[in-house]
Image (tube, rainbow over all chains, first blue to last red; front, top):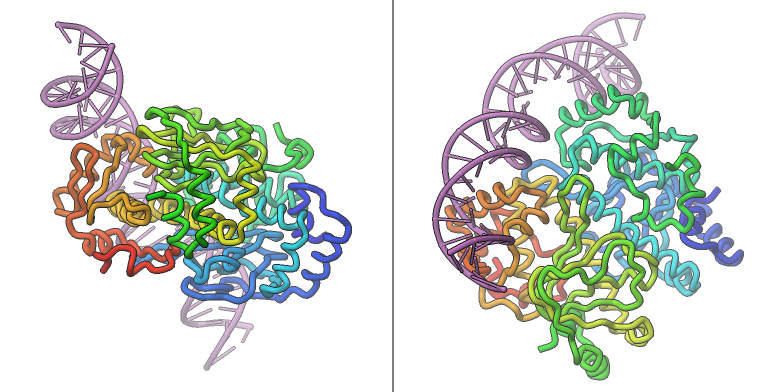
Length: 243
Length: 243
DNA sequence: CGTACTATTGATAGATATCAACGCTGGTGG
DNA sequence: CCACCAGCGTTGATATCTATCAATAGTACG
């Protein structure tokens, strides 16, 4: 099933014709290896990138050698809708795992935006991205490392469930602990210890990039997770196991 | 001068007619005292709030008693454009200082959005808000407390200069150290010490809510500040003292 | 005058980073 | 096929940063 359509329909149903158009646009994805830059800070890209498979991220590299990941992109996510309005990228987008990516040229995007239902769904998506960013700020600024990390894992469960990439409370998480640390503002070493504590507390299992949430209700309570900020049309229906 | 028009024109010039329309919409602001909630998490407001004077913030209060400020709103900023698409607020918006606020009803917003130049400028504004959020994530996650705080002070200089609220490298900062701490994810005590270090290093002066940047070039270098993410049409012209 | 809020200081505890090292794995070249 | 190497996860010891607790002083305000 097409992850873009699934995602946009998490906001509101799309007319048949719109679905067909989206199917058509996303027909021939391009395979991109892991750790490849799709767009770099300073670029003025002429196409919008849409992730169809795999994990990618936004990030900024700092002079002191560290980097901060500011978004985790999963199938169905637009990487850089910004370029419709802003001329230059203020951050870099890179694949994390092996990905399949669609490049949509400006005229085609504008064609999509002429469909009211699609346009609304895209702006919904952009606003949810912003809400996610606010939640990440809370993860880093106000939650303990264990809770913030747990919160992120809850969020990914919901986002991946939205596009049909979960298996109950299990999902593929093809990122390294270093990358997890870059998103949580933590060291690799500390990230490792945080994960160990989550494992020891019986909250998760994580081996071979396979994450299992052992008790979603406890993980949500522990991390203070409330899916409101994802603005799903029907949150109760989306994740059956929800509290 | 109207801060909304000044801000939107930092992106691109607006036609005379659009300016007149905006003038008209923003004619009768409402005075709101400090520390007042404009919109609360869970609300489904029917009007959009526009800040014309004073400081406000977005924030979320956590069960553990702390709160995270996720945005600092200054004159010319829209508080909750989201409500055009999302039904319920996922965070609270409160005044910090005495403010003057415009409430714009849905039909009036839609009338504004029919003007192409205004619509583009509003989306520019929304995208810049997102870019600011990414930078705050870096402030908290990847920069030392002193550097993150310094970065925030640089950002506010640019944003306030945009709407004509600076006096050279000085501006009014009507927020408490506790509030500053809530935005940087720091304790009041630690915030106080961070500010003292910035003062001792000769970077700033801050007394009676009046912030003076003693050496903008040094403060920018110290904090790693690069105004690109604000996507101003003409950054060099905006702040004369820029490096 | 008393009360609340804000800024400030000192002492201490807890969280996180840093440095160094090791084992495991998969790939690669000899 | 084996030796080597790079990337990843892991562990221990230590340093640095930040939170917590407690107290004081100044200020504004009723």
